[in-house]
Image (cartoon, rainbow, N blue to C red; front, side, top):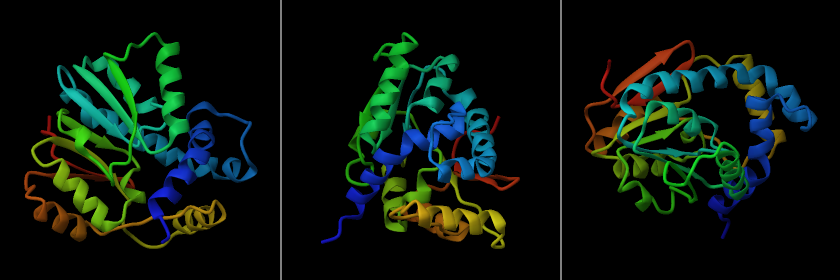
Length: 225
């Protein structure tokens, strides 16, 4: 039987560091495909900054888990907001190894930030002890039933998840589709706002709202400040 989950892990294990190299580090030692994708990642950097703005006032003295943490860039940025502790989770072993090195190089102890190589689609039990769950770019690679399962797992917690935006099929969307095909991505998905509403309702979550501006969309139940 074809194992979609194993395909995703293999894909991201090989891709995540090169992908992040063009996102954050301006790394020139990446493939031609990734260099060609750089101009279209400005929006993704902006999305990361918006996520930080939305969550920063809620982190103090709380435990936060970032799903799809990659090499830990986003979660390490949250340390300055005085969390009780932070947990980064990613499906890719290479991402987790890089995240641990990054934290060690900065002198960050595991009591402040820890990293786990886990697949939240298979087992989300590690979320039981955290107060806030974030996922930036994560749900783009979850199928609808996997998103619904994750929403059930975060019921009773604060959460912040980015979502792909809806709208006309423009140049950006067409080029992204071409990129994913050339890169042999094993699965990239989308769902409408109505479908997200339905999954949240089915999970028993009703106190949520959307941030939806300039082609950046989040769904969250963080208190508005």
